[in-house]
Image: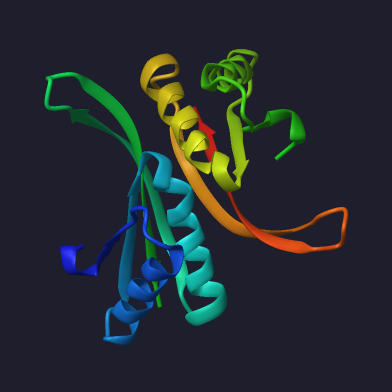
Length: 90
Length: 90
């Protein structure tokens, strides 16, 4: 579960993240974790699906974890935000 | 996996869907499936998290499945859209 095997999903074009995952696998990783929070959760699922359907056919979804993270803004307010971790293995 | 135990996530206020899930459990279901496609996937995770943290503390995420569905529009174009199914049990 090293950070180097984790791809964090943000607001860049979706194929950037797919490429990051594919690169991880092609450089020898046997597990890549796709992680996202809040509004990017749907994009994490897209990245996992595109990776395994188009680029790494033998990649499998080993596990999916969801959780709630508490974020504190600079003015001290806290907000709960959902997060997802998709564990892809080959 | 009967349809009656499935809550489909749309664009209504999030608490509507939480209430639907809670109602299913309180009417005797031991499993409720939260299903969403595309942009509402993040909301499905929110519904699962709010349900188990605030309303049904003994509810657990038994499994999460992701897949790709092919949608055909009226003019014959097809588009791939990711989907998620979250299986909550108590």
